Length: 316
Image 1 (cartoon, rainbow, N blue to C red):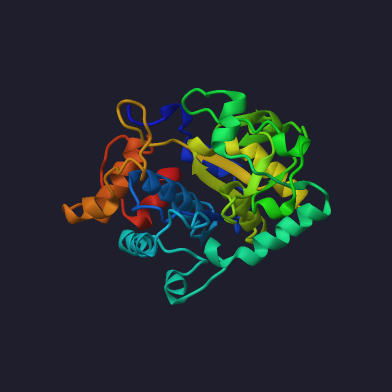
Image 2 (cartoon, one colour):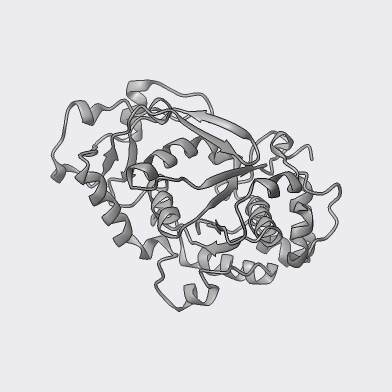
């Protein structure tokens, strides 16, 4: 448990009391930018375990909005991994992903994002932005490790014409967003102070994570967003974007513990951390990996094997 964010751990029974009435919807939404590792498995355990224990409905979504990093072979591998693990979604059928386009794959869902952008444009809140990350850092200066650079509003103050770039930002109000996280309690964020105006489409014409997930969660009627604690800071801006798009009641949020290296770094595809496929090839079973992932974040006292069918027992 020394490798996990144990301060984020919350007991299953306590979480169950905070979830909506049976029939609520959540999602497992990996990005096919590499092979799944134990960190993804921790998220899957929370998604399927809580949903199966407390009447939830699991949607599988492939978040491949970043076409520069996503690969078809990674998508194929993650679908195969889910089948091997015994994790079956209620919606977003695995075979449907293999068959062709589906609105549960972000690269097939561009029309929905464009319509959402039109709505924000009709509110007069969208503007072109030619600023690169380097430009922003040149203005705001270097940030501490793990911190994000706040966009200083350069292209809002000095407008550029729409033909100069495909990139678009949304002007945010200075709203203070209060969210009661199901695991962490009350969280208060002011997105305009954290990140400034949000980039929703980049200079390559690709939709950003912050925008695409808000549109998807709204359209797919996601009631509970279950994800790692590393995404906690995204919550306020996503609630605010959803409100601008017409979502009056935001989803509930649950940010769970992360699996970390001994030096504190989280597991990462970019760091080429050992994948489930490699562990599987070395002889690991699905139950042994599920059990280890659950142990690493404090969901059970030992790394005893746990089958997919037994995941609900970790949360009751």
